[in-house]
Image 1 (cartoon, rainbow over the protein chains, first blue to last red):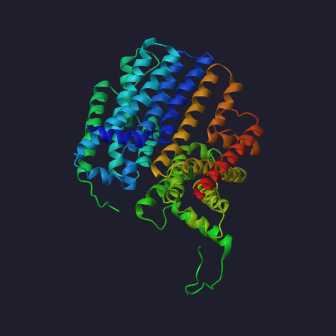
Image 2: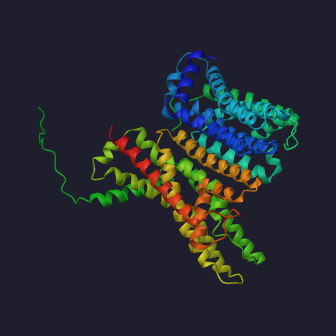
Image 3: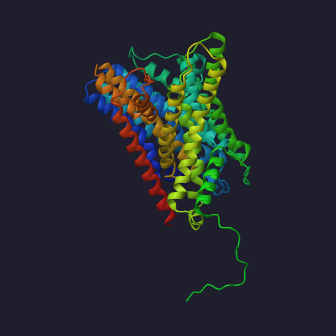
Length: 238
Length: 284
């Protein structure tokens, strides 16, 4: 971890109008929760639906993408990463710092609003709020590592990430049960299911697979990103 | 005191092609860069991959028609079915025509020609709308050609095909102004992609959740308004109002006049935002 690098990264991701993008989706989630409460349909089933389809299904991958690629991809894109890489800081440490920043942003902008929205809907009932919060946190950490790696590997990180999140996890995951095994949001759901006793929540991925998979993706992603940065050619590959 | 000296360079005496030519050139240039033509293979990969995946469904439905004799191709609900691909195309390709000129601050160079800001902006909208229209209209045309060739029992669906084309045009106009306006707020490509897709996903998720909630409360009259939050269903509702087609959502929409007004309002709003953004960028 390097404090200066972390500070610069926070400023780069949150500075100016960019923070709006990170606030938009959590605001939508909490707004929907308030609305559901106001119209009087704040029951356990609608809470689980909102959490599954919006919090874990839409918001988490997208915020993961914005935060995960946002901490490194713009710098690589406009070439200022050279100034960072030419400093006597170990490059794996840079990758780890960027990952920590992205993960902390996801805890703040994804996991916290998830908890607030779930609490607004059902309070502490059958552990839905805590379950989905922990699920969103673990999933967010894995997404941060995965998309950080993607941001280091390719210049089209955001588009490829969207295709993974929307087409693989969303479309194909809906029709092909096997695809769900390799989907971060399904792993997050398994964790939520484990901590919550709600009958409306069902998952296909066993926890004994989800937890090791999350750990492998996170650790592997950060280590690989560090390796890629070590071998990063300063002259660029254009 | 400053003065412009004639230091003896040769003057340009060839034909002046004028503003209309410049605008046409800008449209072509934008259209080429949307599809990555004239760039590296890597820039061509994404748009052509997405365009090819749009063709999967027509091919499958023609095959079904030829082998099983089934005649139930959806000309009218095609954009709604393929909305994820269309949205990804819009998100990934809008910043390719808005980000570079804003980032490298080259607008004064363009505007020193006989091109106004409005022309410049219109060229971008026309190019993006053409690209999106082609993305949707080409598969529809393939489907229609397939239907005419296979000639299944019953009359051909010419009316549905025309309705589909008009809808594709409306959808292309709405999405291109909206997507370009959003993408132009940042000079960075990645952020542009992310913000367009974030707004689409937010709209589609909000629409789904609102509909499910009001439907489960038995308030179908309120629930039908929720569809209009999603731009694809908004255009579909205008289509079903104009041509009397079956709604692609399997339910009903509110009265079509409202959808049409909403569509016009959204178009105007995003066009204004887009123009204001480039006015601002041009002034510095």
